[in-house]
Length: 120
Image 1 (cartoon, rainbow, N blue to C red):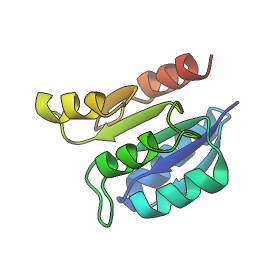
Image 2: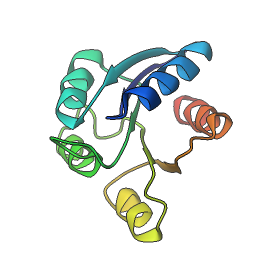
Image 3: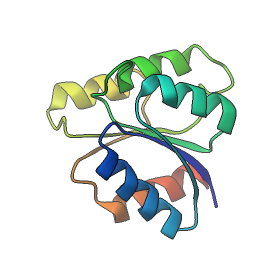
Image 4: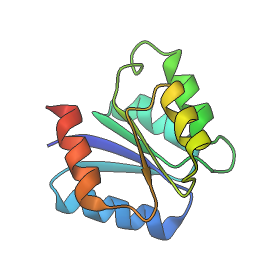
């Protein structure tokens, strides 16, 4: 199906996301923060990027802004998955180029539907 990079600092949630996406047939690469995620993105050439917002070292917003300045990844579908459920956080995500902003706990059916639509 698709190559997906998941960037999440909570190891338990990261593992759940990886398992759900792999069970759906995707190839998944994982990273624990934005810096690791940026390296994985450059090495892995993903079809979809999924990132938490609040992470150490480089948060998801900073990661998305870095990708916006990189023509190779500017148009790669980018989804935020975050515990931040207030409108200001969601609006900020969309204003810097996110294609989706899903709140935790993750509804995997919705996530998989968004991925399917993004790679169609």
